[in-house]
Length: 326
Image 1 (cartoon, rainbow, N blue to C red):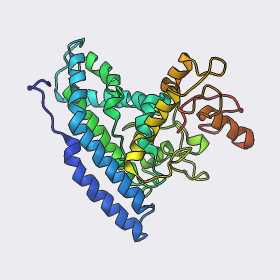
Image 2 (cartoon, rainbow, N blue to C red):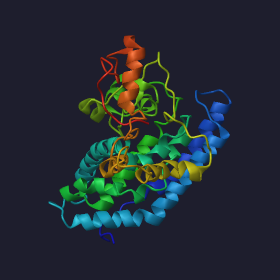
Image 3 (cartoon, rainbow, N blue to C red):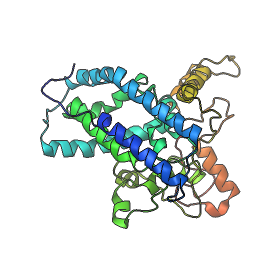
């Protein structure tokens, strides 16, 4: 149970109708050719269905995740309260934590099995923002929020600023906006920066994890600018061939369990350590080397396109760079 003295509005529930109205408006303007973008009816309906399922999941299971954080709350070092300065500090701290969690969602396959849903559309529009997982609460991902709670930010406050973070991210899922003013691009996450994050081009893999502030990517070396000479290709390295929202929601989760429990032999594996790595290694890991992760993709790309070596997001030679693969 949450502390009844700490309450904040459920901003995502309030924002949901606005999200849908903006989506319909963008879809209409794109259809009339008034703004840049692309909508595919089946893809859009799949995204909306996944968004509704995610909202339902939050309603049904969000209390469990909040309960876990309330349990962590007893181990707090401080109680920072809920004053306006603390709310603003929590917003900044949560955004930094979001960067780390988002990066983990790309580098740890168990977490990727949920996050992959958000990257599964081959289109990039406001509907893509709604394409969210149904099993996020089942992965234990909420435990990565524990550092904020231990530092003294109340779980309900953290939930509130997390909602604000997600609301901010909605508008960056569009092709209708090219670039924001330079000062804004330098500090904040923008459509241009986030288009890169959704790209499957080798130089765009595993870049721009920002929520609100792009400065974290610049500090930790994962920032890659959008290159007009290399338009973004959206989706996954190996795209799903289905618009069925149930399949999209669970295909990767099923694939993880198949890999972990696959038949093997003492000679060829997988052994116990390798089975565990199918859970915790970056997507693309295989015990027999039959698959590629992002390091392999980037290396091979530079080998075949040596003039691209050293460009942002690419190694300066065929070896180098490690991150997860989409």
